[in-house]
Amino acid sequence: FASPYSWIAAERIERLAAGASVKVRWRPFVIGPILRQRPHNPSPTQDAPPAQKKYRRRDVERICAREGLALKWPSTYPRNGLLAARVALTLESRARREFSLAVFRANFVQDQEVSEPTIIAGLLADMGRDAAADLARAQAPENKVALAAAVEEAIGKGIFGAPSVIVGKELFWGNDRLDQAIGWARAPWT
Image (tube, rainbow, N blue to C red; front, top):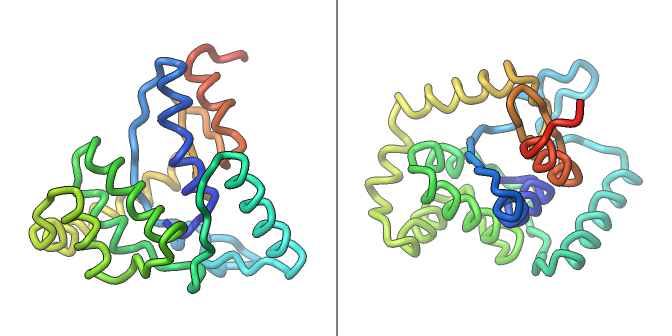
C-alpha cells in the first residue's frame, strides 16, 4: 500500500483482465520483510540515490497523467501499510479488491495516513462494513501469523518487489509488465 506503482497497477489490472477474460485474485502481503533480504541495501524504504528518487517521482506523475489518476503525493512517504494488509487479508475477494483500492486512493489521492486505525475504520465503514469487527479480526494473533505466512509464500514464489503478478508459475514484476502478464494468462508465448 506504500508503492505508487502498486496503486497504478491496482487501478489498471481489473480493466485489462476483463478485456482479456482473465480472472484476478488479489493477494495481500507486506514488502518490508522481502526488501530487508537484500544484501547491500536492506532498507524497507528502498533508499535510492537522489537521481533515482527524482526519476521515480516524475515517472509516477507521467503515468498517472496518462491513466487519468488524480495523484497527490503523500505528505508522509512511504506510509506503513501493515494494518491495511492485515485487514485486506481477512476480507473476501470482492471486498478485498474494493478495500485495497480505497486504501491506495486514501494514500495517493487524498493524502490520508493509512497506518491509522481511524482512517482504515472509515474506509471500511464507507464500504458498509462493521469496521470494529474487521479491525478486531485483522489484529487477531492468527491473522498476524497468516500475514507472515503470506509473505513467506510470496518469497517462495520469487516475489522481490511490488507490484507483482503471478500467472501460473511465471512472475511479472512492475506496473509496466501488466500487459505482458495478461497476455501470458491468455496464451503463453514460450
